[in-house]
Image 1 (spheres, rainbow, N blue to C red):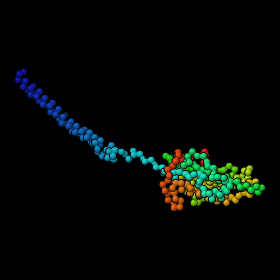
Image 2: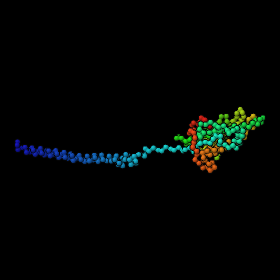
Image 3: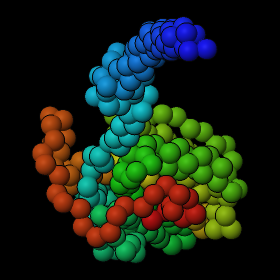
Amino acid sequence: MQRRAPRDDRRDQRTQRAGGLGRALVAVAAVPVMLIAAGCSSDSGSGSDGGSGTPDAAARQDGGASTGSTPSAAPTVQAAAYATLPEGCGVLAKKTLTELVPKASGKGKEGTSSDTAARASCSWSSLDNNGVKGSQFRWLNVSLVRFESDAASSGEQQAREYFGKQVQDALAATGATAVKSAPLAATGDQATTVRYDLKKKEGAFKQQTVVSRVENVVVSVDYNGAGLAGDKTPDADALVKSAEKAAKETVAAVRAANGEDDGTGSKAPAPAPTGSAAPSATALSASPKA
Protein backbone atom coordinates (compact mmCIF):
# COMPACT_ATOMS: atom_id res chain seq x y z
CA MET A 1 0.00 0.00 0.00
CA GLN A 2 2.81 2.40 0.70
CA ARG A 3 4.37 1.70 -2.71
CA ARG A 4 1.14 2.98 -4.48
CA ALA A 5 1.12 6.33 -2.80
CA PRO A 6 3.59 8.02 -5.15
CA ARG A 7 1.45 7.01 -8.15
CA ASP A 8 -1.68 8.38 -6.50
CA ASP A 9 0.10 11.63 -5.80
CA ARG A 10 1.26 11.87 -9.39
CA ARG A 11 -2.29 11.12 -10.58
CA ASP A 12 -3.67 13.91 -8.40
CA GLN A 13 -1.03 16.29 -9.69
CA ARG A 14 -1.91 15.45 -13.29
CA THR A 15 -5.59 15.99 -12.55
CA GLN A 16 -4.84 19.35 -10.98
CA ARG A 17 -2.71 20.40 -13.93
CA ALA A 18 -5.41 19.30 -16.36
CA GLY A 19 -8.03 21.30 -14.45
CA GLY A 20 -5.81 24.36 -14.38
CA LEU A 21 -5.11 24.05 -18.07
CA GLY A 22 -8.85 23.80 -18.81
CA ARG A 23 -9.54 26.89 -16.80
CA ALA A 24 -6.78 28.73 -18.62
CA LEU A 25 -8.22 27.72 -22.01
CA VAL A 26 -11.66 28.90 -20.97
CA ALA A 27 -10.17 32.22 -19.87
CA VAL A 28 -8.28 32.60 -23.14
CA ALA A 29 -11.41 31.81 -25.13
CA ALA A 30 -13.35 34.48 -23.23
CA VAL A 31 -10.87 37.23 -24.10
CA PRO A 32 -11.97 37.65 -27.79
CA VAL A 33 -15.60 37.76 -26.67
CA MET A 34 -14.81 40.53 -24.22
CA LEU A 35 -12.78 42.40 -26.87
CA ILE A 36 -15.65 42.14 -29.38
CA ALA A 37 -18.14 43.35 -26.79
CA ALA A 38 -15.87 46.21 -25.85
CA GLY A 39 -15.45 47.14 -29.52
CA CYS A 40 -19.23 47.18 -30.07
CA SER A 41 -19.70 49.27 -26.96
CA SER A 42 -17.04 51.71 -28.20
CA ASP A 43 -18.67 51.97 -31.65
CA SER A 44 -22.16 52.61 -30.28
CA GLY A 45 -20.82 55.27 -27.94
CA SER A 46 -18.83 57.06 -30.62
CA GLY A 47 -22.08 58.43 -32.13
CA SER A 48 -22.95 60.22 -28.91
CA ASP A 49 -19.38 61.52 -28.62
CA GLY A 50 -19.48 63.45 -31.94
CA GLY A 51 -19.44 60.70 -34.60
CA SER A 52 -21.12 61.33 -37.92
CA GLY A 53 -23.15 58.13 -38.12
CA THR A 54 -26.08 59.06 -35.84
CA PRO A 55 -28.88 61.68 -35.94
CA ASP A 56 -27.62 63.24 -32.68
CA ALA A 57 -24.20 63.78 -34.18
CA ALA A 58 -25.68 65.31 -37.35
CA ALA A 59 -27.74 67.66 -35.24
CA ARG A 60 -24.66 68.80 -33.30
CA GLN A 61 -22.72 69.35 -36.53
CA ASP A 62 -25.58 71.56 -37.77
CA GLY A 63 -25.32 73.74 -34.70
CA GLY A 64 -27.66 71.74 -32.48
CA ALA A 65 -30.86 72.35 -34.50
CA SER A 66 -32.53 70.21 -37.13
CA THR A 67 -33.69 71.72 -40.41
CA GLY A 68 -37.36 71.44 -39.55
CA SER A 69 -37.24 72.93 -36.06
CA THR A 70 -36.41 76.53 -36.95
CA PRO A 71 -39.62 78.69 -36.75
CA SER A 72 -40.40 80.77 -39.83
CA ALA A 73 -40.38 84.55 -39.48
CA ALA A 74 -43.80 86.18 -39.11
CA PRO A 75 -44.89 88.24 -42.16
CA THR A 76 -44.41 91.99 -41.81
CA VAL A 77 -47.52 94.14 -42.28
CA GLN A 78 -46.90 97.24 -44.39
CA ALA A 79 -47.11 100.48 -42.43
CA ALA A 80 -49.92 102.88 -43.31
CA ALA A 81 -48.86 105.51 -45.83
CA TYR A 82 -50.92 108.40 -44.45
CA ALA A 83 -51.00 109.32 -40.78
CA THR A 84 -53.62 112.08 -40.64
CA LEU A 85 -56.57 113.70 -42.39
CA PRO A 86 -57.30 117.29 -43.45
CA GLU A 87 -60.09 119.23 -41.79
CA GLY A 88 -63.38 118.07 -43.31
CA CYS A 89 -64.75 121.54 -43.98
CA GLY A 90 -61.47 122.77 -45.46
CA VAL A 91 -60.91 120.27 -48.27
CA LEU A 92 -62.75 122.23 -50.99
CA ALA A 93 -61.81 125.58 -52.46
CA LYS A 94 -64.18 128.48 -51.96
CA LYS A 95 -64.71 128.70 -55.73
CA THR A 96 -65.75 125.06 -55.87
CA LEU A 97 -68.25 125.54 -53.04
CA THR A 98 -69.71 128.56 -54.79
CA GLU A 99 -70.30 126.47 -57.91
CA LEU A 100 -71.74 123.42 -56.15
CA VAL A 101 -73.68 124.96 -53.25
CA PRO A 102 -74.04 128.67 -54.10
CA LYS A 103 -76.50 129.47 -51.32
CA ALA A 104 -74.77 127.55 -48.55
CA SER A 105 -74.28 129.56 -45.39
CA GLY A 106 -71.02 129.60 -43.50
CA LYS A 107 -68.18 127.16 -44.02
CA GLY A 108 -70.26 124.02 -43.74
CA LYS A 109 -71.45 121.73 -40.99
CA GLU A 110 -68.64 119.64 -39.61
CA GLY A 111 -69.47 116.08 -38.64
CA THR A 112 -68.78 114.83 -35.13
CA SER A 113 -65.68 112.69 -34.68
CA SER A 114 -63.80 111.49 -31.60
CA ASP A 115 -60.60 111.26 -33.65
CA THR A 116 -60.20 113.74 -36.50
CA ALA A 117 -57.01 111.98 -37.64
CA ALA A 118 -59.12 108.91 -38.41
CA ARG A 119 -62.51 110.31 -39.48
CA ALA A 120 -63.67 113.67 -40.79
CA SER A 121 -66.68 114.99 -42.67
CA CYS A 122 -68.52 118.14 -43.67
CA SER A 123 -71.82 118.92 -45.36
CA TRP A 124 -73.35 121.94 -47.11
CA SER A 125 -76.96 122.72 -48.05
CA SER A 126 -78.03 125.25 -50.64
CA LEU A 127 -81.55 126.42 -51.49
CA ASP A 128 -81.90 128.97 -54.28
CA ASN A 129 -85.47 130.17 -53.83
CA ASN A 130 -86.99 131.76 -56.94
CA GLY A 131 -90.43 132.39 -55.48
CA VAL A 132 -93.28 131.38 -57.74
CA LYS A 133 -90.78 130.02 -60.24
CA GLY A 134 -89.71 127.38 -57.80
CA SER A 135 -86.32 126.78 -56.29
CA GLN A 136 -83.17 124.80 -56.81
CA PHE A 137 -81.85 122.60 -54.01
CA ARG A 138 -78.30 121.24 -53.68
CA TRP A 139 -76.75 119.12 -50.94
CA LEU A 140 -73.07 118.20 -50.69
CA ASN A 141 -71.34 115.91 -48.21
CA VAL A 142 -67.67 114.96 -48.02
CA SER A 143 -66.55 112.07 -45.83
CA LEU A 144 -63.01 110.86 -45.13
CA VAL A 145 -61.97 107.70 -43.29
CA ARG A 146 -58.36 106.70 -42.61
CA PHE A 147 -57.27 103.15 -41.74
CA GLU A 148 -54.22 102.21 -39.66
CA SER A 149 -52.26 99.00 -40.15
CA ASP A 150 -52.63 96.34 -37.50
CA ALA A 151 -51.34 92.81 -36.91
CA ALA A 152 -53.97 91.30 -39.22
CA SER A 153 -53.80 93.56 -42.29
CA SER A 154 -52.37 96.77 -43.65
CA GLY A 155 -54.20 100.07 -43.65
CA GLU A 156 -54.24 99.99 -47.44
CA GLN A 157 -55.89 96.56 -47.51
CA GLN A 158 -58.56 97.69 -45.06
CA ALA A 159 -59.16 100.80 -47.17
CA ARG A 160 -59.56 98.63 -50.29
CA GLU A 161 -62.23 96.57 -48.55
CA TYR A 162 -64.04 99.64 -47.26
CA PHE A 163 -63.89 101.25 -50.71
CA GLY A 164 -65.63 98.22 -52.21
CA LYS A 165 -68.30 98.28 -49.53
CA GLN A 166 -69.01 101.98 -50.05
CA VAL A 167 -69.48 101.44 -53.78
CA GLN A 168 -71.82 98.51 -53.17
CA ASP A 169 -73.85 100.54 -50.67
CA ALA A 170 -74.27 103.33 -53.23
CA LEU A 171 -75.37 100.85 -55.90
CA ALA A 172 -77.93 99.34 -53.53
CA ALA A 173 -79.42 102.60 -52.22
CA THR A 174 -83.04 102.27 -51.16
CA GLY A 175 -85.48 103.65 -53.72
CA ALA A 176 -82.81 104.28 -56.35
CA THR A 177 -83.75 103.97 -60.03
CA ALA A 178 -81.76 104.21 -63.26
CA VAL A 179 -78.58 103.29 -61.37
CA LYS A 180 -75.33 103.67 -63.31
CA SER A 181 -71.68 103.35 -62.29
CA ALA A 182 -68.36 104.03 -63.98
CA PRO A 183 -64.69 104.08 -62.96
CA LEU A 184 -63.13 107.49 -62.51
CA ALA A 185 -59.52 108.11 -63.55
CA ALA A 186 -56.93 110.40 -61.95
CA THR A 187 -58.69 110.46 -58.59
CA GLY A 188 -56.50 108.65 -56.10
CA ASP A 189 -55.62 104.97 -56.49
CA GLN A 190 -59.22 103.82 -57.07
CA ALA A 191 -62.39 105.75 -57.84
CA THR A 192 -65.93 104.95 -58.94
CA THR A 193 -68.87 107.23 -59.71
CA VAL A 194 -72.38 105.98 -58.96
CA ARG A 195 -75.42 107.95 -60.16
CA TYR A 196 -79.14 107.34 -59.83
CA ASP A 197 -82.56 108.97 -59.60
CA LEU A 198 -84.44 109.22 -56.34
CA LYS A 199 -88.02 110.37 -55.94
CA LYS A 200 -89.06 112.05 -52.71
CA LYS A 201 -92.17 113.93 -51.68
CA GLU A 202 -90.32 117.21 -52.25
CA GLY A 203 -89.44 116.35 -55.85
CA ALA A 204 -87.23 114.30 -58.17
CA PHE A 205 -83.62 114.17 -56.98
CA LYS A 206 -80.51 113.40 -58.99
CA GLN A 207 -77.95 111.68 -56.77
CA GLN A 208 -74.20 111.38 -57.45
CA THR A 209 -71.80 109.46 -55.21
CA VAL A 210 -68.07 109.39 -55.91
CA VAL A 211 -66.02 106.95 -53.86
CA SER A 212 -62.23 107.11 -54.10
CA ARG A 213 -59.29 105.55 -52.29
CA VAL A 214 -55.87 107.11 -51.94
CA GLU A 215 -53.44 104.83 -50.09
CA ASN A 216 -55.09 104.02 -46.72
CA VAL A 217 -57.77 106.74 -46.91
CA VAL A 218 -61.26 106.44 -48.44
CA VAL A 219 -63.06 109.58 -49.64
CA SER A 220 -66.80 109.66 -50.32
CA VAL A 221 -68.51 112.61 -51.98
CA ASP A 222 -72.31 112.71 -52.08
CA TYR A 223 -73.92 115.41 -54.18
CA ASN A 224 -77.56 115.70 -55.14
CA GLY A 225 -79.84 118.27 -56.64
CA ALA A 226 -83.52 118.79 -57.28
CA GLY A 227 -85.89 121.33 -58.73
CA LEU A 228 -88.54 122.09 -56.10
CA ALA A 229 -91.93 123.81 -56.25
CA GLY A 230 -92.22 123.34 -59.98
CA ASP A 231 -88.67 124.26 -60.96
CA LYS A 232 -86.96 122.05 -63.51
CA THR A 233 -84.87 119.04 -62.55
CA PRO A 234 -81.14 119.81 -62.77
CA ASP A 235 -78.99 118.25 -65.46
CA ALA A 236 -77.54 114.96 -64.14
CA ASP A 237 -74.37 115.14 -66.26
CA ALA A 238 -73.54 118.58 -64.85
CA LEU A 239 -74.06 117.31 -61.30
CA VAL A 240 -71.74 114.32 -61.97
CA LYS A 241 -68.95 116.60 -63.20
CA SER A 242 -69.31 118.76 -60.09
CA ALA A 243 -69.20 115.74 -57.76
CA GLU A 244 -66.11 114.34 -59.48
CA LYS A 245 -64.39 117.72 -59.23
CA ALA A 246 -65.07 117.77 -55.48
CA ALA A 247 -63.67 114.26 -55.13
CA LYS A 248 -60.44 115.18 -56.92
CA GLU A 249 -59.95 118.23 -54.69
CA THR A 250 -60.56 116.17 -51.57
CA VAL A 251 -58.00 113.55 -52.61
CA ALA A 252 -55.48 116.34 -53.25
CA ALA A 253 -56.21 117.73 -49.77
CA VAL A 254 -55.50 114.33 -48.20
CA ARG A 255 -52.14 114.13 -49.94
CA ALA A 256 -51.23 117.68 -48.97
CA ALA A 257 -52.15 117.06 -45.32
CA ASN A 258 -49.63 114.21 -45.28
CA GLY A 259 -46.77 116.17 -46.80
CA GLU A 260 -47.14 114.92 -50.36
CA ASP A 261 -46.46 117.23 -53.26
CA ASP A 262 -49.32 116.40 -55.58
CA GLY A 263 -47.61 118.13 -58.47
CA THR A 264 -44.48 115.97 -58.50
CA GLY A 265 -45.64 112.84 -56.71
CA SER A 266 -42.85 113.04 -54.14
CA LYS A 267 -43.66 112.54 -50.49
CA ALA A 268 -42.36 114.58 -47.60
CA PRO A 269 -42.38 113.17 -44.07
CA ALA A 270 -45.99 112.92 -42.91
CA PRO A 271 -47.02 114.68 -39.70
CA ALA A 272 -47.43 112.53 -36.62
CA PRO A 273 -50.96 111.19 -36.10
CA THR A 274 -53.12 112.68 -33.40
CA GLY A 275 -55.76 111.10 -31.20
CA SER A 276 -56.50 107.38 -31.01
CA ALA A 277 -55.81 104.72 -33.57
CA ALA A 278 -57.68 104.74 -36.86
CA PRO A 279 -60.77 102.53 -37.06
CA SER A 280 -60.82 99.07 -38.57
CA ALA A 281 -63.08 98.08 -41.45
CA THR A 282 -65.14 95.90 -39.12
CA ALA A 283 -65.82 98.75 -36.72
CA LEU A 284 -67.03 100.98 -39.56
CA SER A 285 -69.23 98.40 -41.28
CA ALA A 286 -72.27 99.43 -39.29
CA SER A 287 -71.76 103.16 -39.92
CA PRO A 288 -70.48 103.86 -43.44
CA LYS A 289 -70.75 107.64 -43.21
CA ALA A 290 -68.62 109.76 -40.91
